[in-house]
Length: 62
Image (tube, rainbow, N blue to C red; front, side, top):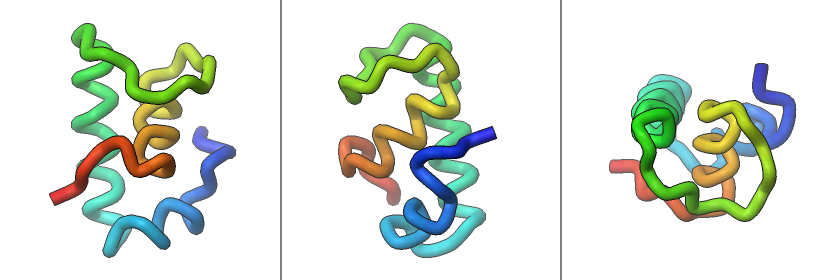
């Protein structure tokens, strides 16, 4: 479960929940496959890392 950043905070960046879920899942799979982590926050869970990257504006959502 993602606690921080909250879904409400992320929805200020992303247009809708569907886009948020798709983008977070896609980025989490990339991280799991060995992609470079773009955030300095220390976490082990790929979904949380992906959410942090989205919140920090380091991942572009199309």
